[in-house]
Image 1 (cartoon, helix red, strand yellow):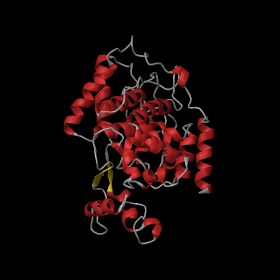
Image 2: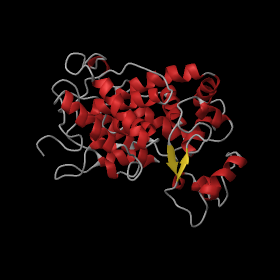
Image 3: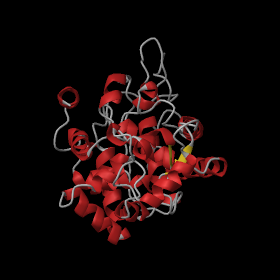
Length: 331
């Protein structure tokens, strides 16, 4: 625990992160109004086409933006492939064979390059794609501050340490969010993105069969839900990468069901249920508020997505606008 805490502190210092996400005043909702006025329309069209073949894509793109911003800020670093100068974040433990949606981002980039060559950054594509993905799934709308530039480096070490883990307890979750300037409301609201999408069996099997190495199931999990999960995630001879709905009630809709699931002890990931496991904790009160009011959840989620999107953006003359999202220009 001490080692992880030191890594988080060290990365926060290196990145210049503190109590307030950086770059907020430098981004502008109208950034592309003159240079690429059709950016939202183009992204929406490509995403709707992708969704016809992949019902999971909206949740995946929302998660992709999250995994980018937590590692050296919202700079598109997660999109970079291995090269002579880059060690890709795609192979970090939290991302490898888990984070997806890269080909759709490439399709969006190609469409934008055709309409507005060299104008829209890959980092901004991630922010806009997340926004539109949530909207198309029935979630809230918000105005996205834009003007991010793309980074020319990746940070595999940071990706392995600063991203929240499915098995993190509430203390570690709070520490990781605070390291990038996000508070408890941001933590609970952004966790609410687990109201849609899928996760692999390997992230829940310990809760089903060997919680905290006891050889027994997690006693906090609803018994009926545990039986339901065990059918598709068996203890032996099961497929560790088999997918289960994060939200068993409305798996492809963006709504407040995630929070009512937590109240019923039906959180899929340990990190989900942790938000409610400490009665009287600030996160438990926030879960209750969101479970009781979808409007309150939507309002906070929209605000928290803007907060997250403001983590250490590159602006002005910093970074570049990549021609291809998977490589640095000129490489």
